[in-house]
Image (cartoon, rainbow over all chains, first blue to last red; front, side):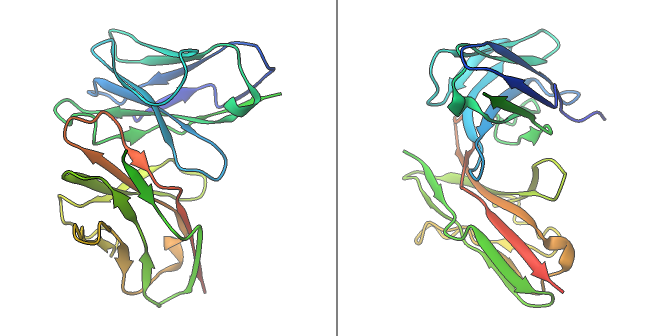
Length: 114
Length: 109
């Protein structure tokens, strides 16, 4: 059974740029959630995707957007990057019937915005 | 709004001593509570959830609705317990986990 994978591992961008982060869900999982973890903080919910539709969103501006594909993999896009977007971005997948509460996390993508 | 508070950012105990990591939450309904752990250079992983009432790696946690707490306990700490621990809350119909800030537990030999 393959766990959640994320790419890239880390990247560096400059203010104003756009970035796309990718996530492959664990085999058999159909729900993907994204979290932002700033240094010294717990993960904060960005949004969740289920059946290719956004299924809940946290307190993040519209410049944070996402996609889910038919194979349940997902992308997180962030436009007009700001310095405060520097963080570890975590993807988590959930099996069917768990209502998104049982979440399996990937290793994360560390984004640095200069 | 739902909130999870872990009052200790750092906790250091000696091997063999009891451990208690505190977690308090605010939510008016019936929550689901979780403890997640992150060992050094590893991903965040589920340690235990209150509805399963399991003991994992010697850890237990009891949901106290009166005190709105879900403290994590282990009677005898081991060096391999050193890690970052996060308490998290969810509830029926929610799509998200609400995490606390985390407690870094260090077990001294």
